[in-house]
Image (cartoon, rainbow, N blue to C red; front, side, top):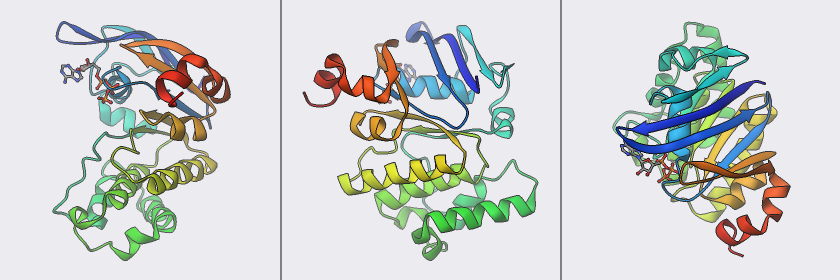
Length: 235
Ligand code: ATP
């Protein structure tokens, strides 16, 4: 398996946030974790990125245990997080925000190629390269956050709620962008409250409730599950 989170448990101080969760992402796949506010979705991504430590369990990347590695070493292996709330530098230009995504890279030609790739994918960012990130619309800022993630040359791009606060038409665009990134061969782990978006782009998914996986399967099977339809798809 490409990426495996095996029986991971995460606490914040003494409070349990993720309880014995196992998630697998195949190489070249798009996998989603859906669930309500506070279910533990972001915590799983933070654990994968090395921003919180595990109480129990293991994280494997191509069979290698990475759960004790620093975040930077995980990024070098290609595990890249686009965090919730975008976390851009609003008073820095778009181009600087993008270059910051490539901070750990030394391959100048590769960085130039990535920049060309993200400007092709997001022409608006090219037009606005010199503008401060904070002057962009919400949708453009989300695209910038994704583009900055791509500048790190990911093999697994982890997206934390990219649809939050966006108009429905922009949410659809986010879906198109994820499909396009995946066509390039980048695997995706997508955390979403918007189950429509998530199950429209992912091949497989996990449903999380209060820190535990309560359902998993093909996106189609999840869409058809009565429990999921009632709780997350409006009936
Ligand atoms: P959201 O959509 O709100 O981000 P989520 O499913 O991503 O929800 P998490 O953010 O992973 O959920 O939170 C899981 C649990 O851990 C929640 O009960 C939350 O209150 C708690 N939690 C999250 N971050 C912290 C923190 N830094 N310190 C203490 N508790 C936290």
